[in-house]
Length: 495
Image: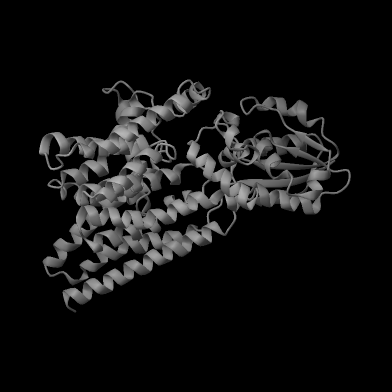
């Protein structure tokens, strides 16, 4: 087989894999999974407020970019308060990111094969597929990151008025749709400054205009929506308790542990090879070493993570895997180039089976997609549907304390549940299970228990749900019905 014929067939296989990834994303979207707690906490404000009210601090100390909230509210207004209407925007961001990562790779490496491989690994990445319908701003971060980079590189390469206008418009608007836009804008701003001051490749001052416009946009946004935000202290405490900030003692083992575990967690999601993530790390390393002469490419692909770590060090923005979702396509780009260089080296040595180096990573992720898609997390809506079909007159409903927000969010969709007055909302703190005893004694003889987002206790072998069920049985209740779903469950108990 000639080299040209070989390239054609490999490209066709990669295009086919991209198609399968897109199909998987649609399957995931049309599964209509329930919103889980984090999504519900944000969605309560989206569906119950108008545009003006969304400019005010959100309920439950939630924070999200104003542009993201406005688009979510628009789709909710157009199609009603349905889970899928809230998932449209992140889903479109995922689909829109596919041509963008292809374009980014073409701009950086001038290789169709690398671009197709990156797009394929992007489409078949289960981590990205999960977040492709998450009602949070993380997939918007991915889209905005790629859009900024592609528009900036298009201008650097073309230097046309049209490309400058697009780059400037994207720079201004992106701040309003993504919290991490400022990181990417800072990266391309430094490149612009370098080209203007050091290399003189772009002598006109116009190269700095997009960065200046972005700075003005960020200052306005910061003054209106970030400065003195009431949720700031809450978020600081939360992320400090959940180890979201880089330890400030650079010589401590905690500092090294933070760096190592965060890098490992990110690398692990690039290829679905479990504990063999070091193989993925090796390919990324090859991608980095092979690009030493492409300083701009390396700076674009690696500096956002470094800047993000710096922000985390100063407790300005936490460093967590979902918060660095935008960096996944950048690392996929390095991974793809590392795989391509490895294949090219072996192919030039006459090793015919080297094609498997290109295709096996795609196949591995494809198998994972078939096994995991569609994703489910907390199917409280299915539990409530079962409850709605089986609730009898005289039955009481006990709602686990953490399930209250999700239960109330969906309650109006179920007529029987909506019409009952016998709903008991638990108020027991997750930190003091002993108070369940007194609360559970107040329940009627026939009661349904609804659970989701269950808490565990390191000092107990039981989770909180099992602890409650055990306490109910000790109070003389018998388990009549059990219906369990992913992340949620419903039980009928009678005395």
